[in-house]
Figure (cartoon, rainbow, N blue to C red):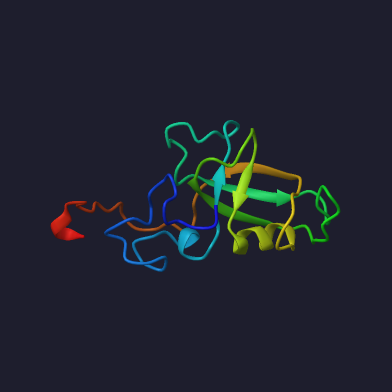
Length: 132
């Protein structure tokens, strides 16, 4: 998922003004977010939106030989539709941190973690047209 705009978790619709709006968690503003697949974890009805996962690349090279450099990063779920089970489709900044590459398919391991960069109290925003 390359963009928050139009993503199923709906983080970047009105009244959010831009991809750098401070109402968004740092993971979303800084490009560390991913779409997830159908299961393990599954998008379902959006119940995993906003959860964080630590993704770690298992190899320097991708499945089809794409050169990379294994790394890891914590990412936030921002969308669904990434395909089958245990599938994360990440934005470029997060993908590069995890794989050291800009394209390709890489084997990873993952675990759900606390979203440590999210601080402060929850906020509520009125979606009424007059506030957008």
